[in-house]
Length: 235
Image 1 (cartoon, rainbow, N blue to C red):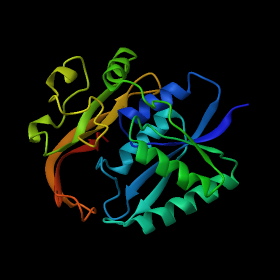
Image 2 (tube, rainbow, N blue to C red; image 1 turned 180 degrees about the vertical axis):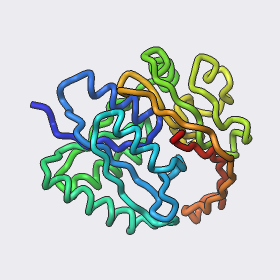
Image 3 (tube, helix red, strand yellow; image 1 turned 90 degrees about the horizontal axis):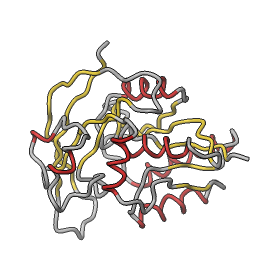
């Protein structure tokens, strides 16, 4: 019997590969996508993608989509409250599991598992502990298409935006950057691949620099900057 599963959909390559992985087996049946968005900007948090494009992704994937709406600078209590409301409602609909594209961040994995336990739900991580360079190669080999839409100024300049995830991608990465950006070095938009019925057509818009305050008061880095590429639906 397959577990009725929610997939936390970031709009990027890891979520796409996680869905593809789950669809190759019968244990977890993904029946809905969950995406966290900024309620003021109506864009995906951290990726900066307009929700219209996420809706187009979901339509091409043939899956219903639900948004968790958060204010621009949401604190953890606000996030946990709205996440909890979403989980309670979906648990009542028969969902027992949540799938995530996380790869090796142990503290994040434990946090997700602890949060879901409160609502009688479990977590699954189909990409967990896999080699990130091998995951990128797999992504390319099975036919996924993705581009970089956000990049940390700690590692990249503006020109990295729009880079295609292809054979040359790994060669261009700095040595201290994870191949999948698992430490938050960059984020992507996945627009085609074996799980999509049709490719998502889009056009590249302007670039923007945004600086964030570090919520960790004990950190030496009080602020962090990101470059964002605006991606727009062609229609």
